[in-house]
Image (tube, rainbow, N blue to C red; front, side, top):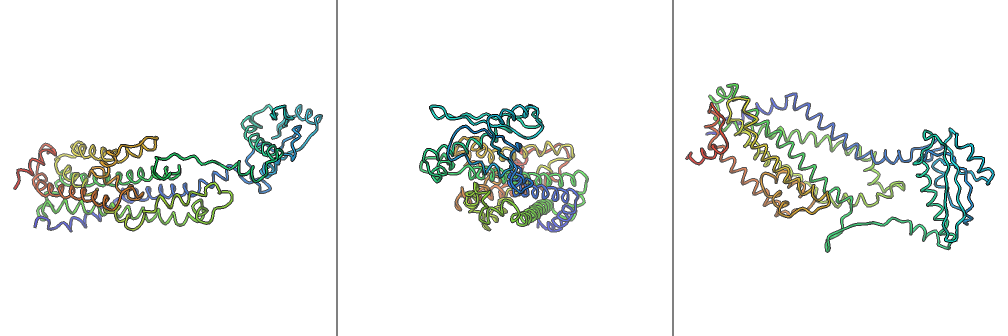
Length: 457
């Protein structure tokens, strides 16, 4: 049998590859990067919230650089503006008379303390009120932006008091202050929030990039392994006991299993890290009822659940199948490229056609996502091509399935087309590999291989 002995090649290649320093280092580095990314996603929102309101000495949130405000309020608004929320964040309001205000203005100019003087005018005939905040001259003490930040919240409190003074109830004021959601959607289609849109844009990008990196990196590893053994004359010794076709089958399957093993290790480490860190950070707060401070994130948990509703055991198995088929498709091409040369110097030019095809497929899968993120609508033809062409479907299919953008039948058709081309590539390898692996001389081009396959009975 022409494939006899592939198991020996498989075992040898698999063991040598997983023992290699490059495999160990890359697994550790990629796992560490993903753990850091997971930690960032989980803890950065909380850190940003803490930075926007770090605790002061009294345990209150300290979001303002200004510590003291000397207030001269001539607005006459009743009830008086409620600055208690601002005071809880470390700002002390001290009401002063006109004489005291003038004295404070004179002293604040050269002050080295975080203090300001605030004048609120009486309303004019149209009800217009002006506010003037005076700060120290030195911007090292207080900047104009510091004043603007505080004035914005003071202005909101004054506006609320004006509405109440005009007879608007506090409940109606709160209702008027509530945010307004702004969403654009295609007529007849359900609205998609900005958060969901971002997830639906990022997931295909990440999945296609990860698959491209793994498929291409390990595909090139097949080419390099075969080319190295052929140019070092190891192949000649190997072929004395094992058929040529068994060599490429053993190597492709071994390196494919190494790739799956590395993905499993990285996935396990990432999953375990996410499970351990989730209860301690942002994700844990989302899943445990939402704290008052995080009320603005009310819809995120539901949005995430709706986006990833199709992530299950079936879709994960499909991901593995697509990866395996995509790897076989490119690895078989890479194996032919590695066998077609007699000098290692020719390897880069031999795998260049595969590189161009792979990059074309990757960008074909990437293009619709980039277009949608920039506010455009990707053409359906590009989406269809990316999901059904064998050069791009390994990169585009998993993300589309995870997001529920392809039905089971559509995914099956895409996988069937990819499997068909893998079978055709395997048939080409079976017909020409034995000839080209024994070839010495100039590099055999891919067109010549196809011609050789057509001539061989």
